[in-house]
Structures are given as structure tokens and as C-alpha cells.
Amino acid sequence: MTLRHWIPTAVLVLATGCSTAQEPEIKPGIDWSEKLTDEQFRILRQCGTEPPFTGVFWDHHEDGVYCCAGCGQALFDSRDKYDSGSGWPSFFEILAEKAITTRTDYKLGYPRTELLCSACDGHLGHVFGDGPEPTRLRYCINSAALAFLPRDSAQVVLDFPKVED
Image 1 (cartoon, rainbow, N blue to C red):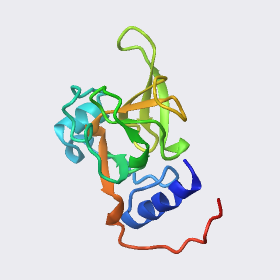
Image 2: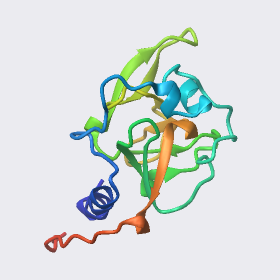
Image 3: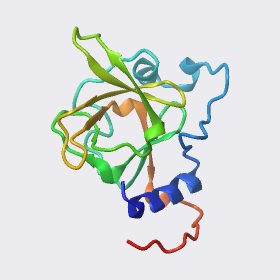
């Protein structure tokens, strides 16, 4: 992500309350079954997968930031989203390296790289090596694991010094 992409995203995150990887909004003793919908709980806490082409964000094209539906941590910028044809929201880059952790998943009998929110440990989806340039990665994410904040929803405008290319 270029600095030109990062500054507007940082403004949005700071202004709307979407947390960063360094400041998760996790409280001890959360009852996830009360906080999440049944589908969010199945995906985020039980490592489920929604059927392709059914989630609210697979064909979503608004400008903004996708956050973890469990804790609000910022995960993906809409400018890094693309149509992979898979039926799930797909991104070629994460917002910040520290926002997501990975582990190896053998549930289908072969190794896959599972993606977890680093703040709440919620299951997001998987990453594959068949994405577009510049990363060649496809972060394949369940819509139910995401919340969306439109870029124009920012209520506070911060003055950043001009950044030279």
C-alpha cells in the first residue's frame, strides 16, 4: 500500500473508531454468542464458511474500509478488493501486517493458510497464491466476518503534512 493510500485510510480509521492492529477493542470475558449474529458466530468463532455468492460483501463496491465484525479492527481497504470469481470478497493486500495472523488449516485434508483477526482471533477466511499483481495473493474472506465503514463517514478531518512522491 502506498503512502498516498495509507493517509486517507488512517484518517478514516482514526475518525470512525475502527481500531488498528496496535489498539484492539477486546474486553476480557466477551460472550461472543451474545455479541454476534448466529452466522457471524459460526464463521468467526467456529471457523465456518458461508456459501459462495451469498455474503453481503462479495459484490460490494463502495469506497471504504472493511473491519472485523467481531472486534472492529481495520483489515482491508476497498481499493485492494477485486473480483476473483470465487463468490467471496477477495483482496490482494491487507491494511496492516499486524492486523491478521495465520495458521495452517488441514480441515479439507490438505494444508491451507487460515486467516485470523489478530485482535480477537476470529476466523476470517484463507489466503491463496493465485491473486493479481502486485502481491499475487488472494485474501478470500467470509462476508459475515466483516463490517464495512464508508470512507466518507469520517466525522473528523485531520491535517496531514503534504507527502511528496
